[in-house]
Length: 247
Image (cartoon, rainbow, N blue to C red; front, side):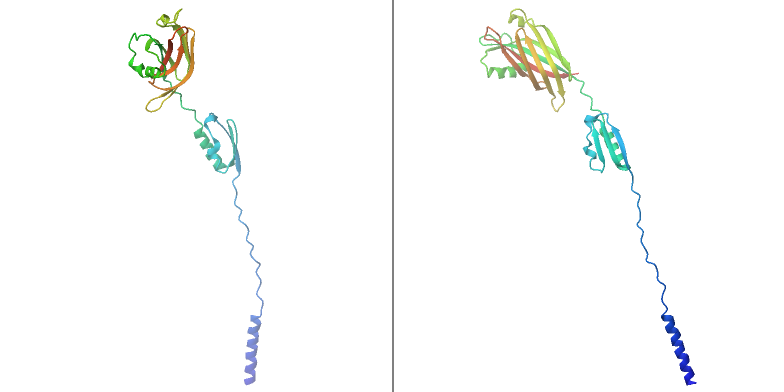
């Protein structure tokens, strides 16, 4: 009996050992497949500007687009969303300039005869006194008499001319007081508190005397724009220009 039991025990151990030695089935290694993400396709769009001088494409250069421009044509290439954004920005910039000021400017050219030894026939208008004092501080004139004044009204950014006869000037100039006043362009720049007025190609001809100049002046300011000696005398024609804005 003892021998039989030993055989059974060994048989059981042998069976268990055989089970432990059985090879396990091998598993194939897992291969990770890359995930493909669909990239947005680029689009190309042509934007035509109505006011090309007021639009700069530099504002959209940093958003990742290819930008090409010729005059009023802008070509945008890139993702759809960015192209839409760039076009919207260009449309906001593409607006006409503000309308020019429609106010008028009235110019007054005061003609004054300055004399070395003459007499002051009439008092000077107070508004001209400061300008005349500037002349008197430089030249030895003793008397200043206002002969006439020429008024010319012009539209902003416009020009014009005026011709005629100045009767009082005829007392000084033999042959009458023929004149021609021409302004090439007048421009109004509204500023605070006083507007700036630019007068380009101011030309005044009285008989044989001629003045030509450009002037930048404030509204209400009195500026001596020229002095011309009268032939054969010690007198001179002085022109003082004033300007004001009118409706």
